[in-house]
Length: 433
Image (cartoon, rainbow, N blue to C red):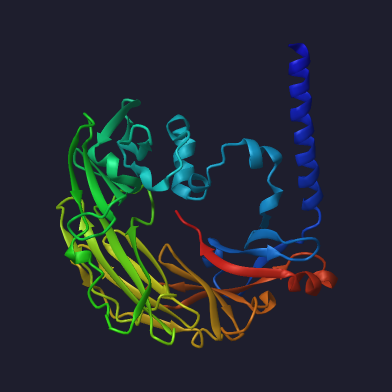
């Protein structure tokens, strides 16, 4: 037995030593970069993150670049990389970090940021699990912490549709009065008889104190149908036909909100007799009120949507902001989810208006639009030269440029050009709360 424990201890030590060797060996070889200000308020870039790779030396090394400097992803310690329960989603959102600090025991093993609700009195986590295949069973797991009492109630609710369900994914959790609303996307093995779809949104309503399932409402309806407008021609041969569902929740994941926006999107590709393909793309969205149970359609965008357009959305209070982006332009639309009305005309900003020829990446966060711009044409083969890229922050209200910066080498000047040409930037993101 002693020999067994000694062997195990030596094995752990050897693996740790090897990990430490590789970590320390790579850390000294990578150059430091940082985001530097060209114009505007540097504070506006505090939440901006540029991601990409350093491609000098042997292999590429993924990195994240901010105004504070560079973080290489391979420089985690051996413990962090292999042994620690490192939950990415709950460590990359500020409100999740705060919950971990304040409620460490409750937060242990929680990994879905969409499953939290928090107010002054209650902290709730709700998720789903499917057991099978021998004995198919679907279950909601609802844990409720009453702050004043420090007591956690654990509720387990068995669902009826287990035998025909592939998966259930929780998208949002809210509390209205004494009811917990658990919004979930459900995928079925067989098509539902009503409309032929295999996916739908469901609102599971649970009693706050008893954990009883009070009701469940299916939210897919004609208000979210995406079959209208799809052209059918006799000589067209279907190639692909894909439908996706998205729930747009509060920009602060754990924050109370009466509304959620549900979106369906359909991409339909056909080919003619010569094999030429054409793709039609339809999006529909509607605001759902947890309080009233009403599903209110939102106006359709006037922008000519294409299958390759990137759409990002966020809700803050009663306002929904939608960002449509492609290589040439950014379009910002605003809606009031309480009234179902568009607040103003859509605002479109082109890459030329921003002083560049193409938009390489764009992101929406906290009423700000973050964009990575290039003076090179969008059709250029290969990656953009990162030495020429500009990072900008725009106000989502009026499109005003608040900040413009670029990536710079933060080491000796004589090595700047060499290391800058080996920096490859591909994406920009704004920090989430």
